[in-house]
Every structure is written in structure tokens, then in C-alpha cells.
Length: 92
Image (cartoon, rainbow, N blue to C red; front, side, top):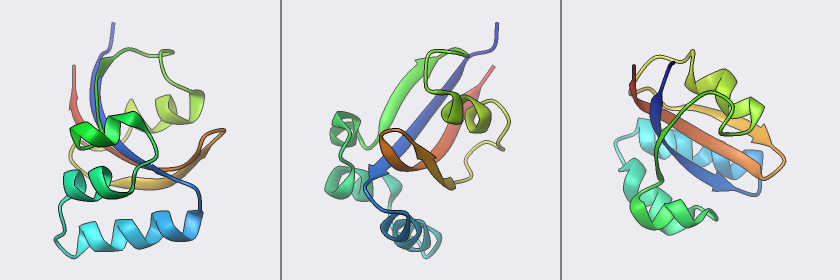
């Protein structure tokens, strides 16, 4: 069965999510921005969600995490929790 490792940043607005994505594209650290801005407890670990399989995260996550290229920031992705930036760090 497929497994993936990913990290994310969770915020309340699509606009702020897009702003953070621009900062990452300009060279700012994903992990540092996650620590400063993510409303998810994983922010304290730089947004690291660890390893998980299909169906363990919300549907919108699965659609990105199991299809997106590795090490490329995806988003904003809207879920019931807010807006996410996602980066798949490993898949196998």
C-alpha cells in the first residue's frame, strides 16, 4: 500500500496562504513559516505530519499528497480546517 510523508502549513485565509506560498517561492524556509504561522500543532515540528497512508487524512489531502510531485509546494488547498500549503517529502 502507498505511503507518503508530508508537511503542511494551516491558516485561516486563502489570501494569507497564497502570501506564504510566495514567501517560500522567494526562498523563505517552509519549516520556519510553519512554526510561526501554522494553526496546526504540527507547526512546532516545521509542519511535519510524518508518514501516513491513503484515507488517514482528509480527502482533499489525499488528492494532493498521492499525486503531486515530491518537494514541490502545493496549495492553497481548502479543507474543513482552513487553507493548507502541502509539500510531499517522500512517497513509496
